[in-house]
Each structure stands twice: as structure tokens, then as C-alpha cells.
Length: 133
Image (cartoon, rainbow, N blue to C red; front, top):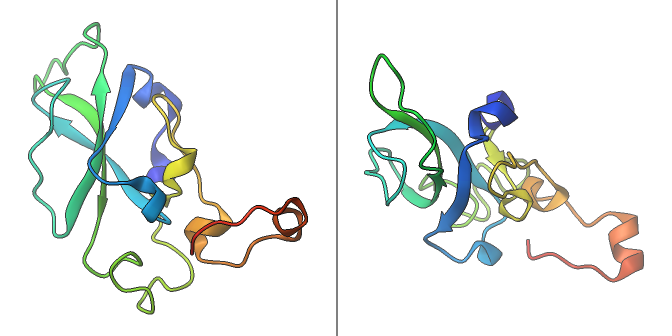
């Protein structure tokens, strides 16, 4: 779950690669996966689809026990809001979901009104800020 990802676990990230336009996504799921490489598109073995992944600094050492690297992968399932807007997550979001606009290399991201499917706050309305829902 994204709430369990700590800043030190992502401290070697150099970049995030997006495979889709994140402006169209209210949220993405994120997880730390054990992968054989620091860079490049990782293999994906979940339902749904991968929408992005992190790249790691060459100074990052692999795990002594497995020889793998822990890298963030961003993904969505078939029943997520982007494909089923009136479905299970019409309001609210999965525990591991964050607003993709709050993510960056070494920044774990967080939930927002947008990711939760809620209406804009009073402050957002007063500032004229609108987010796609």
C-alpha cells in the first residue's frame, strides 16, 4: 500500500516514466516491486495495466539476498474509476491509490479530493481551480 511506502525506500529514484497521460487519471495505484533491473520497463504480472514506473540511480545497490531492486510501479485494475466511472470507486479510492499529480521521484504522493472522487473544496472553487473527475 502506498501509505506503507517510506521516503527512504524511494530515495534512489531518479525519474518516473509514465506510459499514459496522467491528466486523464484521477488516481493510480502504487507498489514497490522487486525487479531485476534499475531502469527500463519492468515486466507486469497483475490484472489490469501498468501506467508508469520509477527509474533508479546507478548507485543503488541490489538486495544482498535476492539481487533485485525495489522499484515503484504504478498500475490500475479493470474495475478502477478510469474504466468504470460509476463502479466500485465512483467515490473513494483503493488504499494504495494516490493522485498522480502529487507524485515525483522520491515523493510518495498522497490522496486528494480528485483521487477520492469528491467535489472540489470551497478554496478550489474560490480560486477557480477545476480538476477533471
